[in-house]
Image (tube, rainbow, N blue to C red; front, side, top):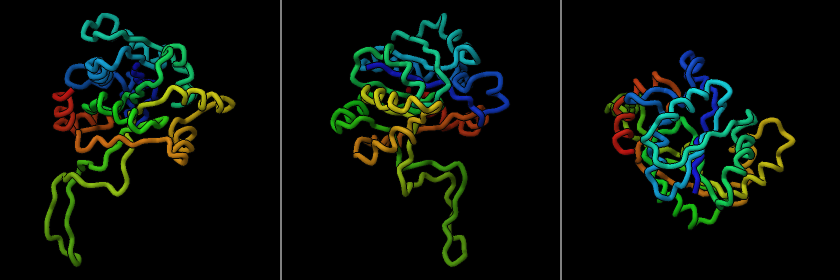
Length: 241
């Protein structure tokens, strides 16, 4: 199975940093974010190749240059130019690169977590759905909370882990390759969003599974300030991948 790292996002939340460096290159522990992700993916035997999808005519060229002389990655690494046609539309360009594999992993580059790819794949195969999305029900908060009774604070909870009423969708997917044909059917649109234009309708047909990561640490790396603010969380993830 091949893994696709979607690294073409504009990273608007990371400005002004991402006006000069792509979000994938946000530094973490002396290396860019994408280096940690690629290393993690390459550690699984189930992953045969890693494909990085980005705008290599623009800032994404920095990603390609970083890996030119990198000897840490033992799996084949391929770079594919995106089409600026949305998170779904860009995947059409992967059909040739994906070959005859029946499924592939899609990892949005701002997701950092020690996810067990093998377990997620087994879950995906058991469910026999067209897509499986990583989700979580527990989230560690960045701020403090108070327990209030009759308008009186009776206890403080400093950055607690809370259980969410709805499962939070993370940017990591296990996708059946047949989804590419569904995306092609939307080709008349200039922008095809994977979640809203493709997966939304499939969910109503019972074709989307949710792989719960439990209390495994996860962070949306949207900016260098987020990394600095959540240093303990980021460090705990880096130690596990």
